[in-house]
Length: 352
Image (cartoon, rainbow, N blue to C red):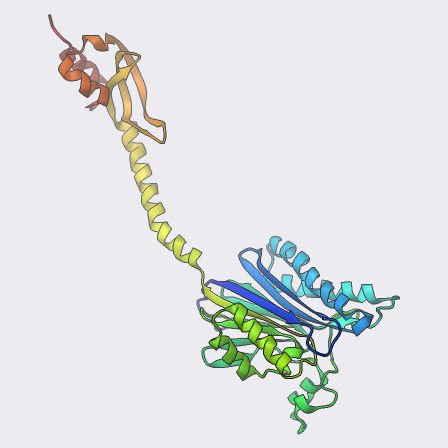
């Protein structure tokens, strides 16, 4: 993040789609779309389970359920969002590792790529070869690094293309594979109009990054974008489960509303303060229990609440007031002080 750069708060809207594909019997992919994770944040995640019938779907389910349950609780404690996200992924790793020990699910594990939208920042926690992309304008950029043999070969500059390597699916990191796990965490400053895309390898192995960006830009809405991406993966063989979450960032309207309300609130506060001063120092002649009374405040009611109080009820009945003054008295006759109000009373009376 650039020092001193202002980060605007953004709102996120997301859609997701997951499909078993045309070859696999079960869908081991899981998704999480949580628009309200606490403290104005949202979290989205994809997890691709490993182990087949040994429990890959169990591992991926544990990953997203732990995120959904533990992350809001940690955020509510008020600590740094990055720490809360990493701690939640660690807990997911521990839960999967514990569930696999000594059972027929030994060896189950899962990838996990989660993004926490925090104001104007995207915090991406990542283990495995699921991916997060940022689509900004005409650029599509991969935010994560594949933790796989193919990814390692690509980083080393091996002449064999990662996509064509026979062992490309072998992972070097996964949740639940070991008691401790190393988690990548990337922080990306976001802008209004940005789109984040989370995918499992069944999708991005079939649909390259540039095409993902083109689909997102061409789709009428987020749901259509997800459907098109998964549809492309199936049209190209559907050899694996394919999942996509598409997240669009927009200006946070609440911020603008608060900025508009701030001067209104200030004006109301000042007006209220001035009104309080006027109420404290304003007097009038009015009516209380059919008698002329000296009142303090103003002769009005707001939402059923009177803005005046009685200083003194005189012994003069309203019937003694001259008809020409009764209407004015009922509405309140302003005076400068209680003493002046007392002096005005005889002049209001009818004389035989």
